[in-house]
Image (cartoon, rainbow, N blue to C red; front, side):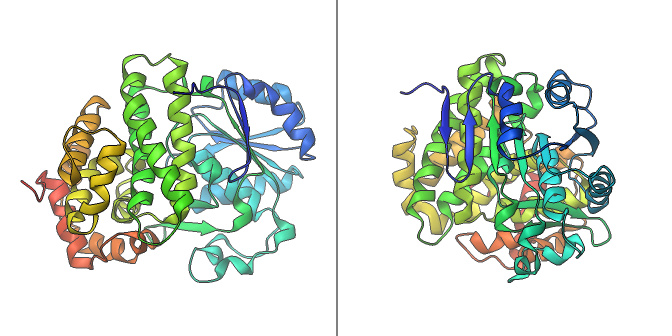
Length: 387
């Protein structure tokens, strides 16, 4: 099996992958004509060695660290004001999915006159944007999960509506990604586990999404294999760059593959994140086996082949659920939403929100709002439909 090593990739965008490649940031900035970039990160990373090194590499850069988990429209607006006041000419997005999503949104909106919600991923809203008003963004992930660095969308919370909304445009995609496994070393165990399960959810939902996209299908299988083979190693040996590198590749694979579609895990995780401010990867980890069980009738055939590709002990959906439950245990993830402080009092509302979420369209079975509400109750109580 090939080792994770230094490589240059151009699918779906230019990716500089390998240990120590964060040192290439000055060259990347010069390549894309950024002389006064805005460094977008979260408060927890603002004083970190990696953020300070990025600022040292570009002394003219400005810092914006007003991003939290589940970034909001207000935070994007604050970053955009900072960008415009400082007359920046590009964005460096450094951090996990929240910082990357916020940074991408700021770069996208930098030259637009419309508000952010006018570009929600509905119909052809993306055509409202002025392509010439989109600044370049260089993405530097510090977690191995969301894959936002290779995504054409930003997930931003509309607090007034109580919804997570997907802001889409093909040019939201960063012009360059620096994927340095060394930057993921300091991630606490609970976030290594949660982001790793998030990467698995992206690959898995892409694999099972209906429609014809053999390129995404193949990438999704390899992404799942990388997670099953390497996330336990990350949890055992958090400083092992072999495992960290493979998990970063799995994260990139997931967000590359899910252009084929997502599904019920994300359709539920989005409203739950908006309503309860829970960690997205943790939500997907909890929801995963319940969604697999609910989709059993539609995915059993394709799951039999997948179980062979992943060398699972038990074939079919039952074997995949068994493997997911074990991996989730190793990753330190809870089994129920109740363990995250979520009860089922809002089940009907969450069912309605999930059925309306754009991710619902990629689920192998078109679930109704009442079916989503039922599935949510199972995840709160911890009852698998195969029990």
